[in-house]
Length: 279
Image (tube, rainbow, N blue to C red; front, side):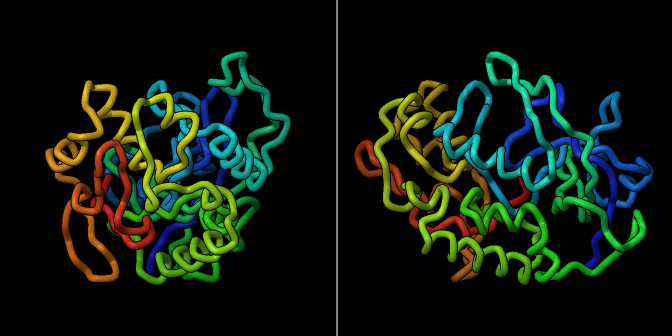
């Protein structure tokens, strides 16, 4: 399974990172051209926004909304610790990092760029033995060294899969998620994605309910637009977001794995049993 190694540094100052997204500066910007898909968006500082593959952490600032902040910020702190970024200071609103010991060394393993121009990446601290820009085979043993895997293993992130993730990597992440769920680590101690939850308003979703972030995003988009829980499935149906149920290899749409009963919402499949169409 061919991927590329891109070496560089991680950056958070003047940005708003969260648990599954961070800025990265490639040592050799020409290496971005190795990746398939869209062109990588690079700002004036040479930094690209990464999308960490296969994970979704609780939202710290989706539009103007957030999920329960204890776990959301915990996932961010976990990411920064793993990448050796220390002494992080935020502005008064906790919306932007104003200082930190960032620029820490690391590398990503990636093969493609998504439509929002972010490299879909597995992130690693430190240095790789291979040369910068090397084409490598990437397997589950090395996956376990990534921040992506470690976040799932610690219960800091939900496994959230999109088309293009190779099955053996997905299986390794699913096993890590299962272990974290059994141990009630992180989000799994409070998760209501499958058991169900009442969502009378956005404030309740923000402060009290721990669910798969993708489900949270769709709910707040719908409720902010004037929708109700009662017609949430119709809203999802209109979006026609494709999803494959792994255990049955059945291709369907996101609305078909959502159940609404009165003011209660739940997913009928665990997150790790779904593979979404490209976001």
